[in-house]
Amino acid sequence: ENASGMGVGGPERSVKDTAYYDLLGVATNATQAEIKKAYYVRARKCHPDKNPGDPTAAERFQELGHAYQILSNDQTRAAYDRDGLSINDEKNQKLHMSDIDPYVFFAVMFGSESVTPYIGELWIANKAEMFLKDSKMAQELASNMQPNDGTSKSAEKLHAQREERVRQMMEEDEFSQRRRQVTCAVNLRERIASYVDNNDGETDEQFTLMCQAEAASICQTAFGHVFCTTIGQVLELEAVEFLGFVGSPLVGNFDAYNAVLQKRATSFNNNYKVLNAGISAVRAGSKAMKHVENMQKQAQEQTPLAGGASPMDTSQAKETMKKLEDTLPAILELAWAINVRDITKTLKRVCHKLFYDAGVEKETRIRRAEAIRIMGREFFAIGKVSATVKDVGNTSEDAEDIKLRAEIAAMTTLAKAQGQEITEKDAEYMIRQQRKMKQHQQATNRS
Image (tube, rainbow, N blue to C red; front, side, top):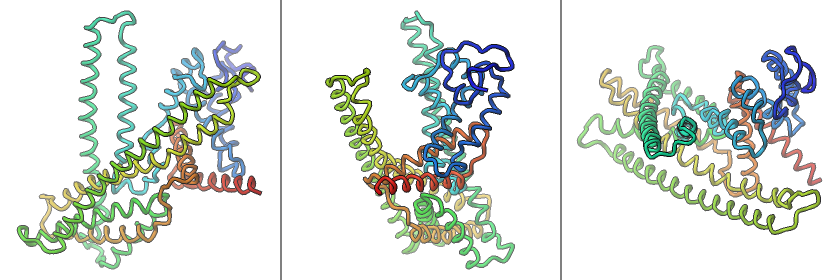
């Protein structure tokens, strides 16, 4: 049944826009059961896995998921029926933003699900969620104000509410970070329990092999080698420093002092990379925006094409999009620099909790440090060997790959919001399939 048919509820209701109903093939008066059934039928047909030769399958699957997301919720469906949505509609952008779960998005974008037990949720994902909450809160506060009430008293009340919410968000962020550290410490303690307790008679060699296998598994993900080298370096240096000073706190040994120097150098290097990547991202963004402004100015000065279309709708629009996509590597480089610095700080505090745990004997804490030193050493070594994923550079292939990962990450968040279970392996598989299809297209075009 399509949007022009009749649902079980009788004649169709009058709505402003039927695009989402047409996409699902249901009437505007369709019940939730009909909408759900139609979505499942069409989603199975256009799922990327079912259409490996169709480069548009992922996009159609994403559009279908968004349509279902809107129509399956009574509130968003009512808003859509009343206001409709257009490509440039501000409300459409807000609804798309509401579909994105930052934790899921960045987990797919960076392939961090496999290392979550070690590092917890990425800082950048937490900040993105706070930003979305803050934006939603600001909209709610503004909408709750009386339309004609422009008095200073009302403005002061809004400002006070805003400040209170910011304070609450800062407290939530601090609590979230402390909880993250505790969770990671517990996970790491469980990872090394067999070595520390030695209940199964596990030898250093057996534990080393286990760490190597874990690191190799992590390195199978897109950016696993970056995670492994970062995690490994922090764990090894923290353990070496603790073991060097635990025997003689005032004197220590050469390895301990060397670890301290390396930690300081790493901290300086991480801060420098964040600063340098930030400057590069700002420059790239400014250059792209300047190009966009120039294209828009040219489009306004030129005579519109036949039919009222602007030159900006054709070749200039493609060139503008290409310039914007070229900024993706610089943005991703900044995100990675922030991630590495955040992981380093977090694991430093996690190790401190394990090494200075007053609830266990000194011998146990030493065994923990020895296990973590082995784990860190093996993670770092395996990460270095497995560094086959090329670094982000200013090439078109890199920009295309980043764009592809972002598309799959967005599609995954929509699917999970609809109750579908998509693992990190599933997402990586879809990325590989889409990459193969694009490479095949490029080869076909060249021939």
